[in-house]
Length: 336
Image (cartoon, rainbow, N blue to C red; front, top):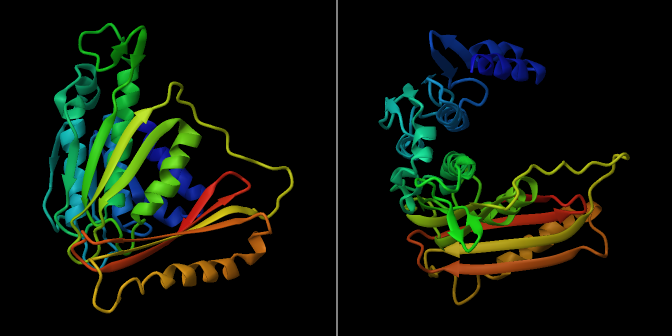
C-alpha cells in the first residue's frame, strides 16, 4: 500500500509528466490523496482511484474532482459510480452529492469479508445502476466491471467445501457464479465509448487477453438528452484465468485489416425527417468513407460488412456510427 503513491508518481515521471507527478498522488497520514485536476482533470481519475481503493483496502481522499471541466465536481453518472463502489465493496464514503469536489472513502476491509461470507450485496441478485439521465453506461461499466471481476476471482479462491461459498457443484465439477449488471442511462452519447464498442471490442478483448467472459447487450438505446437506455452485462470466468502475452513481431510493420465492420444505429422511432428507411444509406456512406480512409491498411482479402438497425424504443432520436476493424495482429480497434 505504501508504494502505490510512489509507483503512480514514478509512472507519470517516466511518461514525461514530471510537473504533474508530485500533485497526482500524495499521502496524508493513513490516507492516499488524489488530485482530480491533474492531467485531463476528468472523471477517469475518479473511477480508477475509487476502484483501486476498494479492492486494495486503501483510505482515499479525492480533491478537486473534475477540476479541469467546465462544470467541476460530481455529475450524476460519477455519483452513481461511486455509490456502486460503496454499496458493492463496502466501507463508508462522504461527499456523495452532485457538484461535490471532494470525496473521502474508507473501505474498512469489507470487500474481502463480503466475498468470504458470500454476502448478498455481492452475490445476491442482479446489480442495477440507474443514472436517470443520459450519463454514459459504458463509463459506469469502467467502474463496475473491475469490482465484479475481482469478486469472482476472490470467490474462486474460497474453498468449494465452505458452506458460504457461492461456487456451485454440478456433479463432480465446481462452477463459479455469474455476475449480472444492468446499467441505465446513455448507451450512445458524446465523449464516451458507444455501447457497440463494449460489445464488439471490449468483451472479446477481455476474453482473449484475460480469460474473463463478458457479454453485453443493449435492451434499449439511450441517446441525449433523455437517455434511459439499458445495457445488460454478464460476467463470468473461464476455467483458467491467465493473461495472454501481447502479440509481437521482430519486424515493425503496418497492421493489415482482416475484417472491417460498420455499425449504424438510430433511435427515437423513425423521425419524420427519415421517411421509410431513408436512414439506411448512412451505413453505405460510412462504409465508403472508411474504405477510402483505411485503403493503405487493407488488401483484397479484407472482408467488409455493415449492420444497420433502428431502435424504436429509444426515447430520444439519435444516431451512432461505430467502425470496428480486426487486424492481422488479432486485435480489434474501434472508432465512433
